[in-house]
Image 1 (spheres, rainbow, N blue to C red):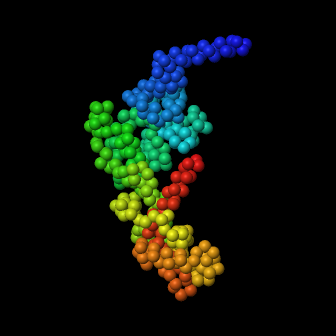
Image 2: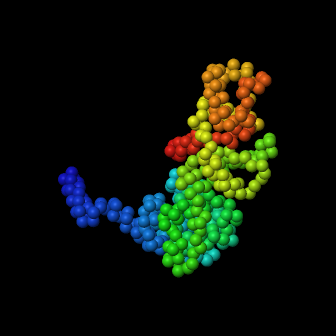
Length: 357
């Protein structure tokens, strides 16, 4: 038996060497490339590189669904329209349809259901929820037919921005089109139709509103992350005097102004502490009495820190939001202080959380 094993191993090594010498790659790489090309052809994609870029997760979903659709009598007339995938969990979200009024969706939440999918009624389907929403949550496009791209471009041209809820998802989609060279000219050629040019709506800047609340002062506050060229640049709190539907648009208008806000990480530890107290307080205030300063804060700060704080108040024009030595109070931080800085520390915290995941 040892001799047989050694002989088989030698034969395998010889065959592998010949294969690499002839094909320029090993058999595993060749097989993966072949599967990608076949999946692309079965999906009616003209560019298998789309799948190659998406990786094995999308490829696996492609092959499983292609077999399912071909073997299931009820769904033999359907084809895969698009595949979205979560790069963190490797979950895939797939829609297959007959191009008319019958569609089914495969998601992580439908695996336990009968058939492993849910039917999507024509009257219920819209790109806003089923695509832009997912893109806004961090999913990526692994595959999409040219026909779906064409339909999306027409929909965005008709509805954007007023009648679309997930505007940041639209920006994610336009970013994808830019990166993959999905253009008006490309879609015109592929579909034989006149495609409206929606790239005029593409912004390399976009806003993600995390939460909003009403303060005791009667204004509305919005906590938001500002992105530029796909990267988080600022973590801010914006204030507006009245309820508004499209707060993202207002923040867009002042985008550059928000990016110019000083970064709180560059400030002294005392100013950071006052800022954090204001942000975390239900009353949006920070009160440090002289007794509290002596009993607690002097364990961490001293009069040199107060001198530094005075310099920062002047440097950042904070006279209206920080008061020193007011009667029994050593320091008072007022509500609008939370709107004066870019809390870049939260950007780093979110990056670290993503790495841990």
